[in-house]
Length: 273
Length: 251
Image 1 (cartoon, each protein chain N blue to C red):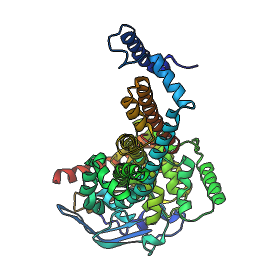
Image 2 (cartoon, one colour):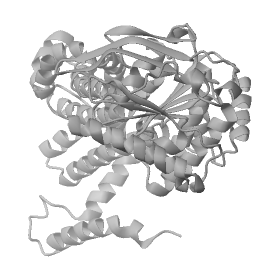
Image 3 (cartoon, helix red, strand yellow):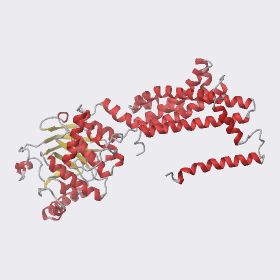
Image 4 (cartoon, chains in turn blue, orange):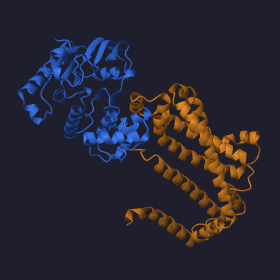
């Protein structure tokens, strides 16, 4: 079992990180969360490297979502601290994408205005809001009629709108909580490619909670494998296949080996329960 | 092109008119008690166009709309206030449910004492009944705002008041309109009853009651139809407003 700390600097390739910085982006120290019937986290430590895509994977109910919800301030931790380059959450811009896009988007706003809403909260004037949305749409090459209301869009399109709403503030870090698990398989595959493209375009530090190991390995630079609660880091598994990854990536030995390794650790964790 | 389906509702109307005409022409019911459709609708038409019925109709519309408006002005802000804190709502829930279950007509004597005989009593009893219905629906609309949507706004950095105005209010709108539609229906019922029995000289309720007293059966049926049309139109009006402003309801 290896600690996530220290891994970052030793992984080959991290020296070519866009930011040219090796210091972790997010430092989590002593994070604890108790519910009446269970301790989900007990003095949990983790470093999240900069400009990487991290997938969080683990047994059901181990607190995958709770982890990113605590980092993103949606769930208050009982103890511990989370710092982003030494600053608290209130000092940074971040994006969060919910699993349930249907309930996360605002049906009274057109898709365009949904994307622009975080800018409105920041007090950005209308003209600038519009130009920034246009810019993001052009940048990502999104082909959706954004003058429609969310309920007229398909599930995948709605989730894409959610992701754009999270990206519009140019976040330092992007959280996604099982973003594709409400979509059908075809749409899931399409959305994986969209997310990979967005990550390649923006290089934003991304934390993705996934319940699909194939997806977790395929998309990420590191798979964070969590144990049953109280959650510990079982392993912080690197996967450094070059991007853009394609269907062929999934047939390569390194992918198969990484996935098998993760599965073995996962099953060991499940059986411990 | 209009689809044939659009004509389906006409079939029910045609059947009613056919049965009515038949009953009338075969004298199955004393024609004094059930006049022919022609004489009824002639009376309705003449009454509405320049007759006394039209003036009574307008009176009832004004009373119903004013009581609903008063109810909405009081109940919507109060409902938002109560609904935004579940604890607050739970502490007054029993009172709301109790008075919502109390027949508003049982309140007439009390309101007569308070406001005397006149429009103020009618309108205030109807407003009282409608307000409780609206209040209850608005509060539930606010309380049942999707948690994910509130969290989404919060995570984007919305302040408490922003969450209230941008999300909770919008979230409660569909339920608010349910309340308004139920409220206006109830207000009409109360207004018509009040016009019949608490010293009124005009209004549809008074028209029905007076026609019955004078044994003017076509006049009575005409007034009943006018009241029915009014109730239907009010409901339709609120539905149209709802579709215009709450386009996302039920989607």
